[in-house]
Image: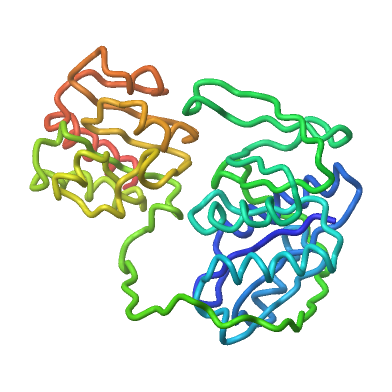
Amino acid sequence: MILIYTQNWDGKFKKLSYELVSYGAAIAKQMNTEVVALSIGNVANNELQSLGKYGASKVVSVNDPNLSVVDNKIYAKTISEAVNKYNAKVILFANNNEGKAIAPRISAKFKAALITGVGKLPKSVEPFVICKKVYTGKASVDVKVNSDIKVLTLFQNSFGVVEAPVDAEIETLELTIDTPTIKVIEQSKSTGKVLLNDAEIVVSGGRGMKSGDNWAGIEQLAEILNGGTACSRPVSDEGWRPHGEHVGQTGKIIAPNVYFALGISGAIQHLGGVSNSKCIVAINTDKEAPIFEAADYGIIGDVHKILPELIEEVKKLKS
């Protein structure tokens, strides 16, 4: 059995969860087994049913007031009980902050192998061999898993959303949930713009932008392309942009379809967070900048002169 932890946001699933179910369904086909999608929190039945469109034959819902706060310890215990109940052999998480916090606990609990940041299907299931990128995406390695239970985290936008409709059986799992040790005092949510984790196109700026006052072009290009905005670490450290936009090894790790790197030299720490992008477009004055080694398309020149021209060309294509 394949067990998938499907996150929801205010009771709604996003593309990330549908991609996880699609990926799990593909592995289930390889292993000749079924997919159980686990939902934690208050999610309506029609929303739970939507997971069947992507291959989840059973959707298990666990809802309790104590689960309104994401406490990694409590969530891990809840997921562990589901693993035992359904005798899951592969457990899938998203390779985001929540997934990376819970997956190691599950791995330790079941003495299971943990393979993070996968993006492709296993090359074989007996033995279980799967490929993942290493050295900030500069190389790939085949990992052979010997443990009976495997825990995987999937890079967003690495597999895609694939419809494989089945009639999903909705089941409610009643568990005794511990009281969370975390107390949320206040929440602040980003509104009115595409979130980085959801963006299929990301426009990002670095120190080459010279000042936070020069971000209008980046925001305009992102808006035209219905994309998100990001930045390198020095930019967020300088206070030019919010820390929530920082992408890289010490920031958010993203994998959009297109990543625009504007005025970003491409230090290894930065590339570690964006190397899984399907296409990288770079603009930089330094022809020796490391970003050009990772870029699919590169323009050597002044970003302040090129960006306005790029915006005008994109506007023509959109009109």
